Length: 423
Image (cartoon, rainbow, N blue to C red; front, side, top):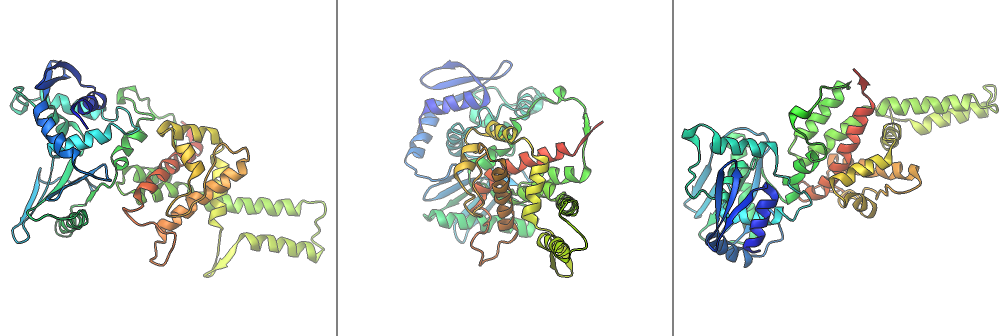
């Protein structure tokens, strides 16, 4: 990492233009005639400290006496601007606040490497900039030597870190235990639902999905179609949830809504096909027995009721509503150019869900593998028993599950639109 990388990351991510650069500072144009500076000497010192650190994570920064990680509020409830607590016995300090300058440089360097170009050039950031520099004069930031790092901390939505300092040196695993201990205390006593992020994709996911269709509200047209209300509720729950497994299950419920009808219709069509065969006769016991066997093979009797075959119902639902496989593959490429190849060459690590080759000329094979990939992943989330070999473990498997959410959300959207009608 060097100063030029940080300079380029700021211009790339925020579209701040450089108006002046000297040996001591870089001046960025922020908005209108407002500017902010990057102190090269300060940044150089921080980069020297960062370059001697080693980390396998892109959202957490570990040193011998400190730990800092990006966090998010799941329930979005408001609390004091800063949460701070000191443990005088164990000589540990905890704080949730805007990130430190060192962490911000570390974060920007990693964020600029993501396959999500210009994700922070959003309307939200623009509004915050106007409020910061052009709002009530009593609230305005002083323009004397204002730091561009401070500006970034203010305009990035929901940008807070948990910062832990310890007088005694500690290992990374020790700091991680302190993270969850502190967050549990907040949840237990104050109902604060705060979670640490484990990887950069958790931060970029909303921007990556939103970039597919993002436009200003003024560019939107009124609805031209009406949809099934129940499906919209599941969909809205999915996009509003911060919990990755809840997102997946909410989008899955959109598909599950149709299982019983589609499966039963398929059985009825199979029965009609048998009854109308020229070789079928209701007078022959063999033909009647064959019809009974057909029904029994499709419906299982358990706990005093007939149960449908969910994997088969899922596959039938996909065939009925997701008719254009190339369109789905193209939408995946719009999210990330690597996704289609990823699904082709990788099963789901924690659920062993099937590989899916969207370029396969055998479409039946695509639907079969797609249904198995989705269903096995759903089961690994719902049935996470200690003895299960293929089970989803929260946090540990979230990065892999996030990739599956991109796929399932697109499928849920296709199903919702296919079941809509014109106003």
